[in-house]
Length: 295
Image (tube, rainbow, N blue to C red; front, side, top):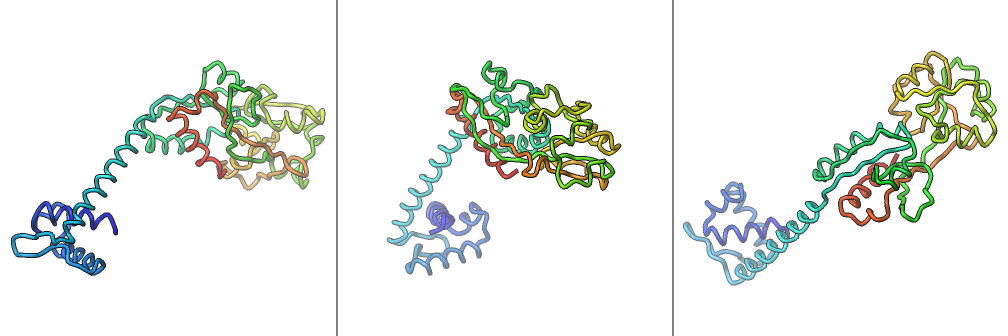
């Protein structure tokens, strides 16, 4: 039996007539009467004895009225308990990431969290160097990284896997290749977004293991500047695949895999193990995982 019928029975029984009941339920008198007729047809018995000025419960209706009170009270208590749980999700979270590109996805997520959990204050720390050290020293609360930290004080949640691609001009000397090998970078200008090189995936996982050092490496924090450099055919810029659809694309850009199998990496949300049981932290982590796992 639908909840609206319990409200209908309770309201008519307590108001005593259809006029007051229709006003309280924000229904027309004809709509209220129709709902009651439908209900009685389903139940197979009358719920009210009707008269012009007074509606009185039948014996069966009395039992339904008792049940309606129990059901509606249980629902109210349940929602009050949920509200208390939600209201207890209060706290401040400082979050960072080792990859500048990932900041592009934070805006809509924080907006969504502001609606769902208005008492969680999220602060983005625009500092990508040594995020694990900063979590341990409690300068930040969590970070998105591409390697699981080796510390029993921390816990990690796998969020998603991505692949790094090279972006270059269509007239670049390497533009006709099916994929790029590490040796292709030896005489090239590599464009990155931040130093040190230990935080740059293409260098740390693709070039360094093959003992390749590009002839020049330049860092520009703003993605727009990196793309301008590529648009002028002044270098190769490497970015995660999921960010490509967010970039200002040019008909002159071409995208190449790094190695025949591609340069793939996992992303983990890392936080202190002692914080994982806190209600506001748990709500944030679950929401973060849900929001970004489809990247």
